[in-house]
Amino acid sequence: MEITGVTSKAYTSTAASVEDEEELKEVDEEKESEKSSKTEKQEGDKVDLSSSDYEYSETEVEDKVANYIQNILTTTNLTESSKAQLQQYLNTFDVAKFIKSYGPFSTTAEISAALYAVTSGMIKRQEDE
Image 1: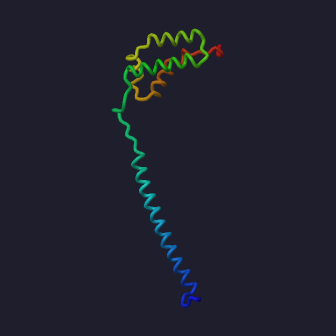
Image 2: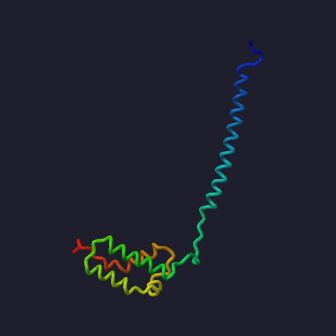
Image 3: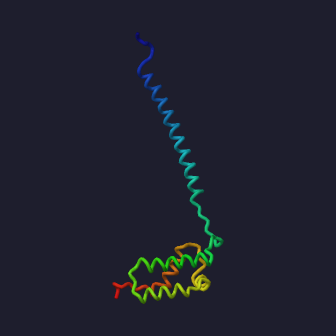
């Protein structure tokens, strides 16, 4: 059986136009998708930092300080005098004075930085002597 009246040129040009049309639809859909994802990213990337952010309470700061000092005491090879100085600091720690001098604190990193400034002179390792 033979089909007449249809040339291969006509068939290929029709198929090509259908393929082109599909590609254009895909490109349009991709552009729309990119626009919407860019809009979502721009809206989602905003960070609002204000002075009304969470601040640690005195109890929370005291707990963080105790943990910080205990970690130093247990994880480093400190001299006996250094251990005694750190323990003395922990025993006489005044959280209100600490917050007034170095705070207010809204992150643990801020508390750690302040503690490092205070305790760095007290830390002496046995191999340093």
